[in-house]
Image (cartoon, rainbow, N blue to C red; front, side, top):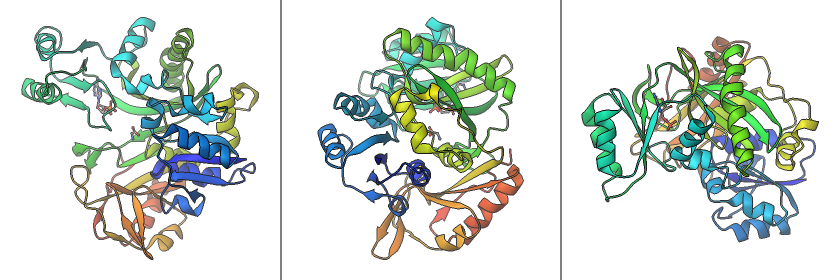
Length: 415
Ligand code: AMP
Ligand code: GLY
């Protein structure tokens, strides 16, 4: 079967690497892809926002499955356009992708279904927001812009001034949709579930490292590293999160006539009262996906196709190796505020010789040279019998990379 992969980051490189190992794969295309993905796929210049062009490409190249990596094309309905044209797609409909596309939608769903999550108010004016801060919430308090914000829409405010500043920024042009939330204390963990509109199956967990600096300091990023499985998510807590959060969510989506099919990424806070939902994402996490793929030993194409075709129940549950995977992101100087692109990257072959996978996240070929083309540049991933062994290999690989413009955290997996 021919497959088209949409996206061009570290997540998609890991998916491409794993898809390329599937016995059922004939040709893999990637749009736009990146130089790492190009080792496994033919790169095509398709704009994912141009649904007609994507559908036409799938028809012309006999594509049997389109795997949609990032959230924006899902919220934009690319999976719907493909399915309407008879092309199987891995990823939820636009209606189901509201679980990530609108924080207010998800909070209302949780409230209606009794799903544990932070207490909240939805507000659509600066005045309502001020009333909620005055009357309902103490400090810290969390302020979230409603829509997709590429990881920049959330402020955890420890002072009223910080909360006010976040609200002023969102309502700067007079309108906005905001969720104000109770602060939850605890360890965070990410849980991944594959769902095909009917059946659902757990697909591993991971712990992200969101802050830019060692010791969880500095601004939030898209993620500076990941460990899979999430150390804090015991089997008992995972079972509770599935039963109390994910299963009722999937049931509510089906009952509303918008069944969820794809991967559902539950961002959890493990509180003293048990797991609570922080947020949903409707795609694999990045860099969590890189760590998950390093542990998955099955046929990824067969699995994603079964999800897309509603045949998940007919498959044996997917198995992730009992080992630990660690992903360390190498970012461009200045990330996240103003990453300096264009820096030359060397040493990838030496890094891969350690046994680690060097996934490309934001790279570009410049003649014969490889240069940085984004904030997160590489996602170096290694597996081992425990976190210490996996960390050792990942950092040995990183130390072999020659990229003077880059930086990375030294403490991924140490927490
Ligand atoms: P998000 O962009 O929704 O993943 O949120 C970014 C980060 O903000 C999360 O990973 C949490 O660390 C933090 N966060 C979001 N909501 C809450 C909450 N209600 N309580 C505490 N921390 C939160
Ligand atoms: N690493 C967090 C995310 O992908 O949303």
